[in-house]
Length: 357
Image (tube, rainbow, N blue to C red):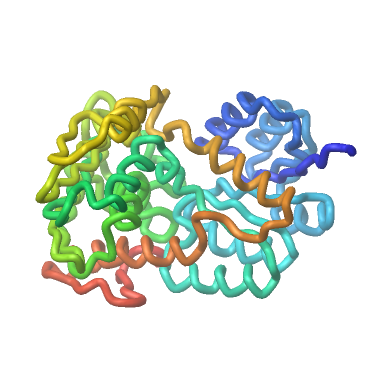
């Protein structure tokens, strides 16, 4: 029986594209082909086409028309503010979609994507890759087994470095297309905390620009309250010099604690539990991964799942637009708290007056 080749189209050939190149080059299976690449900047598209020996096109709408019924999956790697419009357009034209985070700048738009993908019976997934890190999977298993007991504190810290040149393009740090460190870099880590220990009930944020010049923030200090009764904090910045320092998630419970660290939540740096088996201890000790940068290793797992699901005609993905809605709603709550300079309740459809506008 002939092996099915999954034909992929990639939209956006900028910074994160180079990370995907590494992922595809390391992939051992030859069950896929990057059939076409698209970027409105011709030099980027030309370079990407040379890398994959693929076709190239400079207009997304034309790509959808020209390659109708020729692509099994479209991967969207464009600026954040374009994700919603491009995802909706691809779904309307009957393409399965894998989209880099955030899927939408406005939380309510994620629900529109969910409704459309289900109505069209198409797969839509979001690349919150840290959920697939060995350390994060271990953390969730331990939590489900009640090894922490009552959760007391959940702290997110991301101390990274982005030089001014990073913000001098046409979209990074802009309210309409990106946001600041909270919505661009720290969204991965906030998503993990919400996904495992949420929902969050209330937040209080103070956002500032410490070094970098951008519309949005380069630093955010927030206090958070979970519906479970746990409290926590978010301390995130891109003002560290000269390079990324740490990305950590600290979880403290009445019966134990754990600290995930590294630059991509790729290590378990410290832990203690009153009640732990040898098997569980071994699982913890084997959860560390070596990574090249803050992207981590788990994009490869996301690609594996997407290709496998399409092969099996499974029209779902572990991280859906509904997940995107919940995380985006929390992000908007953090921004709204800074705007109002007070506590904000995390209810449905919270809207920042700046983000995505």
